[in-house]
Length: 281
Ligand code: PLP
Image 1 (tube, rainbow, N blue to C red):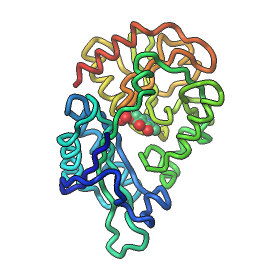
Image 2: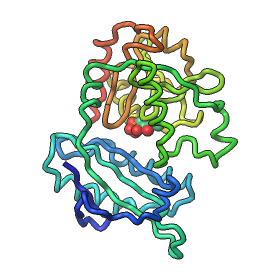
Image 3: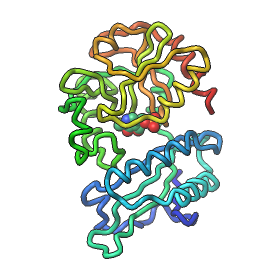
C-alpha cells in the first residue's frame, strides 16, 4: 500500500506520475528528506523530524520548508492509510524544476509499507562490517559544502555501501573516518552499550543527528542508564557489551557480528533498550 499527499493536505494517486523529469531532486539529487515511523496512526518523533528537515534544507540553501504544510501532508497520509499497522512515512523536499524562475520547491509526503527485511532485523539483529568513508572527523566544519550530516536525497553512495557489505557477507555497514573513529551506518546511528552507559559519536564529526538515538537516550536515562556523546573507535565497539544501530523504521537493532567477529550476546540488553525506547512513545 502507498499513500501520497501534498502540503495542502490533498491526496493523489501514488501510482500516477507527479514529478517533472527536469526536477532537480531527480537530475542532481538536490533535495532533502525524512523518514518517519508511524505506529498505530501516530508518527514518532514528529517534531525532531520536521526540525531536521528544516536543518537539512538550510544546509542546502533551500527555501525554509513549510513545516505546517508537511505536518498537514503527513496527517493526510496517516488518515488515508489502510495498510499494515506501521507506516514508513517519507517527507521529500527538492529544489524543484530546473530553471524555474520562481524557484518553487517540490514537496510531498508518502506512506510506504515497512520492509520485511527491516522487521526481521528488529528481532534477529544484523551482522555489520566497518567501511571507510574517506574523510576526517574535522571535515564537516571545514567544508560545509560537502553537506556532511544533511539528509539529502543523494543516497546512492549509502546504498552502494550496503551492496558492498552484502558482497562481504554482511547485512549492514558502520562507516569509519580516516582516523578510524566510528561515524554512522548508511541509514542508522551507531550506539554502544558498555557498563550501563550508552555512547554515540557526536554529530559534529559529519553525521546525521539521529532522532531514534536521541529518543533512546532520553528513555534510557529515565531507566537509570548514563548516556555519553563522544568519539568512539572500532576497538571500543568490539570491547563493549553491545552495539546497536538505531533508525526510525528499524528502531533499535542489535549488531551480533562485527567484521566477522561475534560480539557478546546482547539479546537481554537489546530488550531493555527497546523497552526504554518504547517508553518514549
Ligand atoms: N544516519 C543516517 C545516514 C540515516 O540515513 C539515518 C536514518 O535513516 C540515521 C542516521 C538515523 O536517523 P533517525 O533515527 O532519525 O531515523
